Figure (cartoon, rainbow, N blue to C red):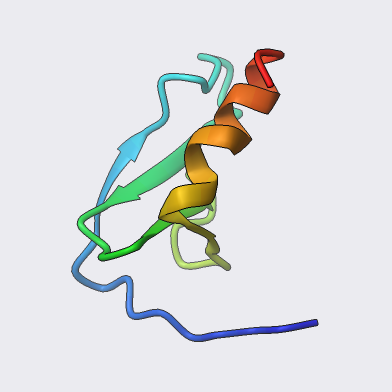
Length: 67
């Protein structure tokens, strides 16, 4: 497994529009250059999954069934 460290301390987090209102929320970080960080809103100090910016659109399209 390949792991890299990203500094997400300056990222602005917002709840994803794809999250449901039942506490199962995903937060997406904005402001990170070249990547899209994602975290569980219930565990903001927990692990962060980082997508390459170019991979984010196709990933979301696939989740929506468009890809």
